[in-house]
Image 1 (cartoon, rainbow, N blue to C red):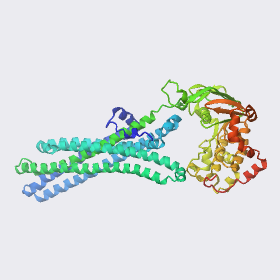
Image 2: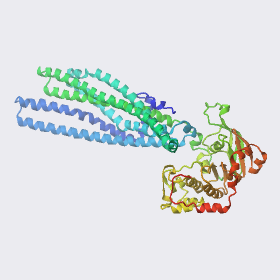
Image 3: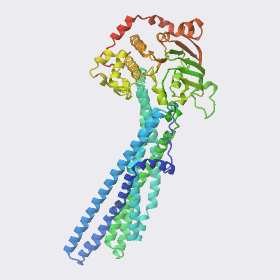
Image 4: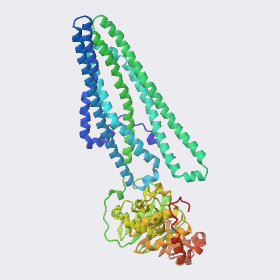
Length: 635
């Protein structure tokens, strides 16, 4: 099971180092942030103006008019102006807050766009060792849920906290200045507010932690089970999977219910305490008003200030949780962004000139197991041990061996998905670690056992965004690999929509599309990693015909379980228990009666009758390949 301790970590409410780094993403938008800060200044005074206007209306116009100290028309005119002024403050307050929210939402969305793009770019450059130890669901959580937590902080949290803090200061100043006795009576309930807020914060922190962990687990579970749905259905695991998902979903629901309960108790609790404060002000202020110490208008205004005083406290308590969630999310995101890049991803290195096509492995040792920096892997961890061989330009080399012998690892090392611990891998006599990795990989075309097609069109899946591959080259490549009839049968041709992973294409069609992809990019080197092991005989015949064209003038390394591919190789490399034990042609290795001979007896001998297929059979297979529209994988 995956380790979800990162999601469970609460972190500090505020971490100055993380905050500095996080707010660095605001730097490109500092002008907009400055505008939002300026818009904050008038919001609090405008919000505080309402109760003051009530005080003026009562003490200057209503009470004097009731005592016949001023004429009724004068009082009415004065109340009219106060009412208009009150409406004006409301309108201005709305306008400033609207503009501030729009500006901060813009800044928040732009910042999140930048951050998501940076995270995705980092993911593309991280080494394969990182993906070996990182569940996909957790990485999806980083790019989605964690970035959304930062969006809540940037888009609304910061501006709201600044507004609320400024508003509290303004209210405290005004209330103390109006009547310090009434102010102290209002502030008497603050200890109770702090206790309730402390309890609420702890409860919500724990609930948010459990929500975060549950979401990460749900994402991971969904990714695994949707990708492996065929296995789930094949082994009748639907009921078990539903039960597992129901448990994950229940944990998420319970955590959310706890958070909702905390909010349901906190806000009414703070409001109740606030009402108690208002009642206290009303009772104490009423005695003062009756004694003539406090004017009635001041008492009314003060009660309104007391009522508004507790709203920012509620908001700040909620925003502190947003701040803490953002700190925890930023810590996880920055941990991802700080993952060390391999030298291959740095973009440096020598650029390739004219390629001859020579490959050499010289005393190569490699282990996947992560060892402390500078420490040698353990003896049992070595996947390749002292491997040396040479591939001359234009040669086709086949690699065979039992599962786990190191065949696929050899290919991954050549493409620098991993770096070796000892020895050298040379391309035209140059160590590949000295080469620019983009230039290196550009020279290789690779066809895997499980071809991967992306959502898009047939053309985009062959081109893969390479500008030098035009539409005509795509069509020619598809025809070259035997998909001419299939392509002509598609109503939309190259614009045919390909669903996720090419689900509407058969296995053979997907494999031939990946051959066309390699051919269209015209690589100097070709790698086939068991590319025909999952297709039927007819498709294999088509692939063999395509291979004749693909291999012409190219250096090729083929990992194969089919004897047909091996027999046509210029040389066969036999791997056994992490070492290269034998090499030679098919007949030479059989004559040695060694490892290859035993492998041939166990694995390849039954295929021998199917190898000698006459050319007309290949032509018949190619002629029958136009099966019409894409179909589900049923080969």
